Image (cartoon, rainbow, N blue to C red; front, side):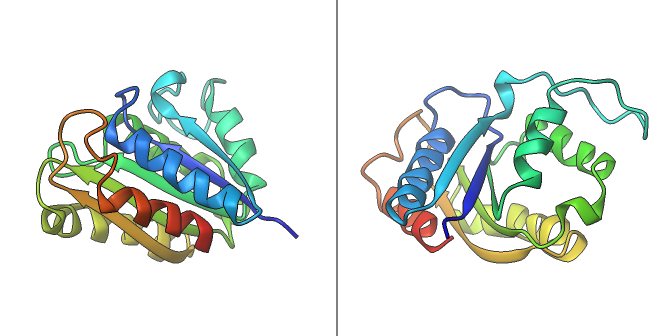
Length: 171
């Protein structure tokens, strides 16, 4: 039985390094015989969290995809040592979905930065684990931390793309 993998792209840069890594993960997902989708948060309208009675927006579409997913890949460039604003708004809104509706997911992190991979690990990996592994109880399936990439598409041809594809196969 095939699995459904949802890749949440928090990058606002079309064709950027994060998007390239998302596509590599998706390629691996499909090569493994599974189905996958990339959701580009920057192309959606998701309002910041304003309490339990949230106005209707594109969050409901994302939530519908996540509810039926076996695995959720979190993808973001490192902005000011953290996830992008688009991804953080989505994360804040997850509290309106309910922990039970999100239970039992596998997850992985794909992140890139101009900074070295050690900086991504120090500033983002722990926060990702705290939010998705510790808080939601998702099962960590690994990560790709692409350091030293800046210009959009620069990650192509680097070992990170092959690592992302392999991660997609393992999900």
